[in-house]
Image (cartoon, rainbow, N blue to C red):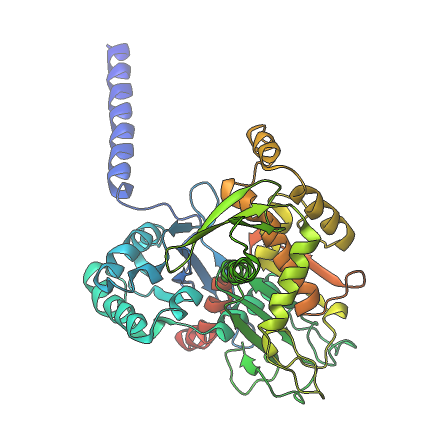
Length: 475
């Protein structure tokens, strides 16, 4: 009898445990994975970088300790402890002639991020969409039509709070500022110290300079030692208190629209077209091209329907010289009392060769994907490997690619690597006058384990007042 009673109690206990597990599962089944615990002082935000070739989503969260400190911001992680990032193609600019479709194009990004925002934070989550050079190249009326469609269409498709001012085309200046903020934030250069430092003369660390190259444009941004130089200077404050000088910076920042690597390729193609027209005798229907590997042929169709061939010669040094000539031709005359970067942009009296300078995007890809030289820049090594790759015959390159000797490069990268490496070389040394041997330049994709994206800098800047709201909520 006692044994029977013990069995019944055991069965009842197991049923109770299983019931508890079942109801717990039912209660939690509709919740989404969030890699961080929910704490009241956190804020969440989605930001979309609508670039020229595609739109990338990033999800961040931030917290505050004091209004006297910068907001502390970090990527939200997925169940595999990887940052929440998602990209869709093509670029937003492809909707210039069909703006009504733009909101539908963006929604997969929003839906993906939404599931990683804790339920209690979804109503207050911030949303930003900033479009860059691809959209800037569209006619103004097309830009406006796409933005208006997003302003009116997204609120009908998502529960997120959509603020029209947070969805816009940004100019290259702000793209450069956001990039500069991101790299210095990750490096810890905005940290305040107890005593003044000899380098900056202030209670903060010295910052680094940043150059970035996308498909359509290129940017540069660095802190100036004083406010004596006025051209292309922005004064920004990253702190929550506008009158606080601790986080106020004078930044030289400018963009070079039309000098991204893809637009540069178009300039070079026009250069070849002109060269072919001037030198054509009717006997040869191709132009020798030092920016293509040996014997790679590329057919070019002109606006009038005529065609010509680019025949690769793999002469990398000749490619660099051609690009340097293009940069010179595309640059207005500089005033005799000043130095100018390429494009005729007045340069501050600061030597970039003596500055810690980081290069992102194409500076990294062109150095790393084929040449395996990303990171600290060594001019001799870069030049030697770039020259060696380009001097190969195209069939040999294809054979090596099949053997996985270029695992980070697709066919498009392999075809254009000669030009891309020459383009960034010419921009760096002939455009920004960085000394080939005495410099502090390095290309980067990640700093530590964090990928550098201007989206992070944008979120830091636009959430700088968050600490004030947090302090007020505690009072």
